[in-house]
Every structure is written in structure tokens, then in C-alpha cells.
Image 1 (cartoon, each protein chain N blue to C red):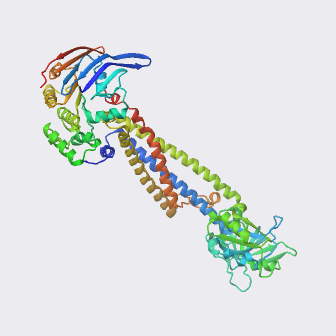
Image 2: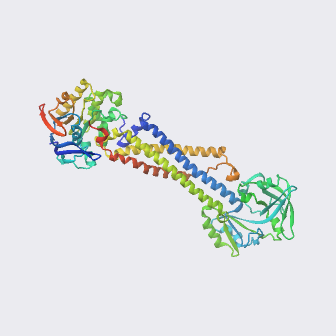
Image 3: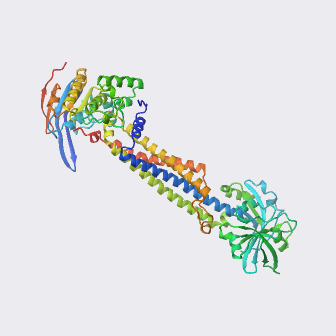
Length: 409
Length: 229
């Protein structure tokens, strides 16, 4: 017999059990839809932004690390002043809080020459401590160079751009000219082809054995161009940077990836602002819908409100009826919206439903990266804000005069 | 004395034009009285009923309900008095269509925080008495106008009010159903509940003890009709 204890909850539940009869039920469905789309777009906006950011950052880190340490050179030349692997920074990097890995590198400008084409490039020489797992995500053909040979390896990994430019395929041999006095040339073999989508790398960088560069520069095995440092948590970059600064040898200088590739990180900040603008618009639309639906529901039930007031219901009790109904719409919309977002994200990640042009977006499909805490916070924030907005139209109930609502006459 | 109106005036202002709905009304209703208010359309009957039911405030004058001056009480206080002491019966019944007949009648007890078992007992007894127990699970639109008005009367009575205010309770009913409702109101009145009824029907008014005639917002005559028990 419906002997619910809470009067407002009871009436609210009965109002929705008899749905489908009123204009407001159609509007309610539209509101649920708009909330669902709103929350889905919000979750996806965050997830896609996070996906973009993560993918691009990972690509940058795979070739540039988080922190780079080398001797200060007051020029833009690729010629480096060697640093020693005997330095404390390299030897004791594992003891620096926040540092995950350190590896050596050396760079040298070169000219790649095949029978048909010539192209400038920078060889990045890496050693046995190189974390190839990070880089291998970029490989689109072949494999990474073999660094375990006794002598330096003559294998290289070229970018897809360079491979296309020089019409190179896996296993092809070509000459690499190193511009120095006297000029030196080496014959090398293409072992792998990579693609990051980031022109700064793809137009320029080839990967080779650091021992080749050491030989060309007449360095011994302890002399390298610099160190690449990876940290545990990118969000702690500034803190770890300070730790490295404190621990490093005075002859070195260090740079953060966010400074070296400032254009990307500035772009992330700009994207972040765009996401915020989109979210505000979505919230505004969803809030406006909830207000409209609640106002329609209230207007449609003027007579009921008047009757309840005449019978002695308080404004608060009547307001709660509509708040409960609003909450039901919000929860329904949120559940649908979350399912929609998670479902779309899953399908997108599995089947790449929305492809992208890698030359413009650095990746071939829209990336979706969900973060549970972001989803939870988005939902909670949405509920809190919409509930607050929902209170506005219900205050109109207090202004309803029962006599106007029921009209004795 | 249950209800007393002293020099009550009610003026409505619309776009700067003032309309006097009630002018210097002095009226009292005793516990156990059955009073009818009659008069032509626009004479102020509704305004008077609104003020007597604490749904509206007078522009001037005083309303005393159960010994308290309430003309300028706030909405919470007036809602409290309505909830505990006044029952309303409307011409168009005003049952909530999403609730069953049982739930409509039960409603006032829910916000009076009466226990579930007590509610069940009181609603059941009243429905039996008003011969609508068999319509308990029906929705208002599924039963006849007479049965709806009985349900509305039951809803007005369930909280055991001191005063029932009825607005044209037979207005939407045929003569047979109208007679049933009037006999029911008389029966309730004879048990001690005061009834104030606005009506155009002189037949309905015949059931009351006193008839008040209103004209142009003024109380014109009072006739004593039926002898109080």
C-alpha cells in the first residue's frame, strides 16, 4: 500500500511510477539524455586529452628522456664535449630520489647517402644501458640494433620519413658521412624503421651504436655525449630535477624535457584550457536542461502543489519531491553517460573507430585513456553542481500561493 | 469559538487597479456549526474561504483561529494549522492522480508523522465508513465523481480536523451523488466537526444551520436554517 515513511520520497516515487502520461516525462527523457551525453562528453574529453598527452609525452620521452645532462656548450652545434661515465651522477644515479634509470648517449651530425638520394641527419648513439623497450613502441618495421657485438655495430634505425626520403628498406646498406676534419664515412645497414609522428625526431634522428661515435670522435669507452635520465613519476619532474641538480657534478648542466620541447608542453596547457571551456559549456547546457525540466514538472503539477499546500505540506516537503525527481534524472543520466563513455572508449581503443592523420596528430587513432579517479571526480563534481543548480527552480515552490494553484471558485 | 473574522478586508491590486473583494467582514464560526456561504459569482465567496482556510491573508482586519490571531502569521505557522486543524474539500476533488484512493486519503497522515499501523487502521476505517473501501487500490480517474468526492472528504477528515472547508462540494456531481455527499457532511457535522461550505446551490445550502449571503464583498444577511444538536 505504499507506506513509505518519507512523505516527499513517497510522492516522488509515485510520480515517476506513473510516468509516460505527461509532457514532462518526454522532457525528462530528454534531460536524462542530455545529462548522459554531457557526462559522457566530459569523461571522454578528459580521457582523450589524457590519451593525447600520454601518447605524445611517451613519444617525446622515448627519444629525449625526462632530464638530459651534458656539458654546457655555448653553441647549437651537434658536436659535443665528452663527459665521463665515471662521474658520480652516472655511477650513483640509482640513489637519487625519484630517478628510475640513467643511460648514456652521444649525438653526431651526418649525411646519409644512397645511390639515388642524400639527406642530412643526426645520429644518436646509444649504449648497452639503453632502455630500448621505451623506444621499440615507435618501431614500425624491423628491430632495434644489436649492441652486444664485440665491435661497434654498423646497424642503424632510421625514421619512416628518412626511409621514404632515401627510399630505404630494411636490410638496405647506405653510406653515412660524418662531417669532421678529415671527413669520415661508414657503411651501415638499416635494421629498423621507427615513426613517432613528431617531425622534430622523424625528420632528423637515426639511432646507432654509441661506440661508432666514440670511435669517430677518438673518445675512449668512458667518454659519452651526455646522460639521459628517466624518472619514476613525471608529475614530480621539478622535484626530481632539483634532486639531480643537487647530486650532479659541477661541470654538468641539466635540462628538463619540458624546456627542451616547450612547444608541446605549452600546447598541452592550451589544450587543457580548451577542455575546461568545453566542460563549462557542457555543464551550462546540462544545468539549463535540468532547470527547464524541473520547472516544467513544477508547472505541470501546480494543482498538486496547491493541494498539498492546502493540506498542510511544508514548502520544504514539496521542494524535496522535485529534488528527488531531479536526483533520479541525474543518477539515471550519469549511469547512462558513464556506460556510454566507457563503452565508446573501449570500442575506440579496440577497433580505432575514429582514425587520425598521424602527420597532423602524431598518432593514427583518437587515444582514450581512462583514469578512475578522474571519472569519479567528474561524476562527483557533476552531481554536486547539477544538484546545486537543481535547487534553484525548486525555490519557486515557496512562492506558489495555494489559492492560485487550486483556485476556490 | 472556532474561527472569528473581525473587520476583515481583502483588496487585490492588479496593474495599479485595486479591487475590493471583501469589505468589513465580521463573522464567527462556532465549534460544531455548519455554515453555508452563498452569493453571486464575484461576490467574494472564494476570497472569504481562502482567508478562513488560512490560505490567504486579509489586507486589513484580524482572523482568530482557535483563540490565536493568525491574520499575519507566517506560511509555516499557517501550514501547521491547516495540517492539524483544517480539512479541505474542493469542487474538482483535487485528488492526486498518481496516488491510489487509499494513498490520497493516507497522505495528510504521512506528514503528520502518524505510524504506519495507525495510518492503516484510520484510513481503513474511514474508507469503510464512506463506502469506498472496495476502491482502495483504484486511481482517482478510475472511479466515479461521487466516489472521488467521498475520497476527497475522507482525505479532509483523516486528520480529524476541527473545521472542514468545502468549495462547491456538489458542483461536479449529479443530484443523487450530490445528496449523498451533503448527507455525509451533515453526518460529520453532527459528530462535532464544523463545516463551512461555499455553494451556489440553495438545495445544498439547505443542509446547513446558517446561511451567509455575500454581495459585492459585503456580508448581507445571515439566516438560521437547521437546529444544532
